[in-house]
Image (cartoon, rainbow, N blue to C red; front, top):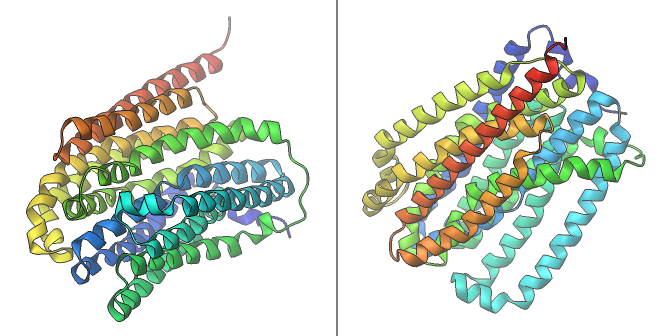
Length: 432
């Protein structure tokens, strides 16, 4: 059976805004519920040493640096495109080939980790068991966004939301059992993360089996690469800015010093639970509209909604942050965590807005922004360790650097969005 066309959104074509708000509202609820369940794992910090908790935060950020967002958006774009142009069998071939190569690349990387295991454990102050559980989590994390992207591209947001919720349940249950029952510390918490991500991947895999398990047909690899590479690079730059600061900071600070940083990052990144669903729902709709040459004003709605929710979330976190930190962490962590939260939460707001613009530009295949984004991400990768080395002992420097580069990203994306709109106006203008 080929793709279920009824789920690819045309059914609500008469009321696109109502469908958008219903779908993004459900995905927002699911994102918050799944995120809260995943976040509940951090309550276990009271049951393990501070150094173990900072190790968990660092290992979690290793999995966060897997190109989840680029992979998901690539397959969201490719599945939306395939469904709009009746090329489902070519999509199946692409999915299976990508799954094979991702598994091979993971095996090569795992061999490299095995060869340098001693140096990695010493540098990051980790356990061997935690490192290898993290590697297995990375493998599952590579598979998960492919199938979630297929769900997103076909606009099956109902099961996309439920996969997030079930994944959160699996994560907290396994982590609680292992930490409280077997005193497994960071390793047990990472095993819970692996099971949770595996549940999300399994649900998405089952729901999209009619897209990837059908008989495949050859696809135009060159044309596909012309779409895939810019998407990977563009969304990869966003994800790098979103996740890499903890790993850089870990190399300059001890486990105990990193605990407030990990806590502030966990709470501040939660702001994106509120706003990312709108961009996730918008993306396949824009791909479909672009292929069909249909007009839509979704982008303006999403930018406004994202800005309002992000700013309100940031202000709310500043107000209730001390209570939340004291509830989840130890009372002695409140002061240092709250000192970092304004910087961290403030850095997330321009990133959230830039993410909307990136989704809009790349959904419509306006790839001129990608080289600038890559240059910005590379510059950040060099600047952040330089700043941490130049200002030793000051964790807030990492967040000030992150905030500055997120503002630059927003400025770059805004400029290219402006150029894109001018170009489209010229194309639509009649010639005399």
